[in-house]
Figure (spheres, rainbow, N blue to C red):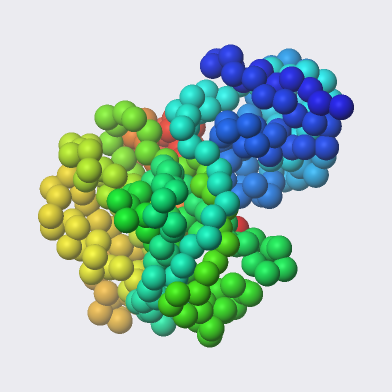
Length: 332
């Protein structure tokens, strides 16, 4: 059995079978509901069910509380339709023209830019343009069918290349990248996914990244350059030591080029004793120190889930950030 899902305020409609999540059903019909991890852990896809009945399925109470369920909220990457539905998802119209596709990509180059981070560039088939919004991610499909997600670190390229920043976490694919991956090897990809993208406003921006959460932020910075932006942009990039900020020189040079951009590296294990005279501690708390009022700002936050959720909570509660202006990609 399938059900009709009407998306407000656009009025678009898609069909969802009883065994499909609302997110999967929307993606299958070329509509992108807000999402990030697609695993029910980050909360990005949380949205309002206006009319109809759903099964919350495997939604974690720690991510979607009982009070939120009672108020009609759902995790669209977990919820399944039990009747015709009406949901509220204004972001759908902004992502028109982006379609998910499966493709092969050949490894063009591998640059080991630090002890544990590699920049991998992939060449896509030239005859099939791969459209995405800077900030979105693709999934690499491994031989056993499992998947790993990596954000594009550049704007779409005329030569149809993608750039990934991959940290060696000891996982199956990241270890493979460091031990076996060679140029010209073919990989299977699917994407783009995610609704982390630059909103079309003129509000000033605070970007926060931890580790390779810098990758999608870099893509947003390149997009802002192409737009000849005059928006004020502050980037806070956190790591334990300066060596963890694997493109520190690139960002420093970028800041010297563009007067609208300010870069604040934040290190948690460096101090004056080690010769570091910059910001220290947790990266999101430095933002709170520097900005007592974020009510006119947009925040773009990428990195580990704990940092993302801490930033969301503190920016809203302590700095008056509008919750609707917090955009995040939690790296699961």
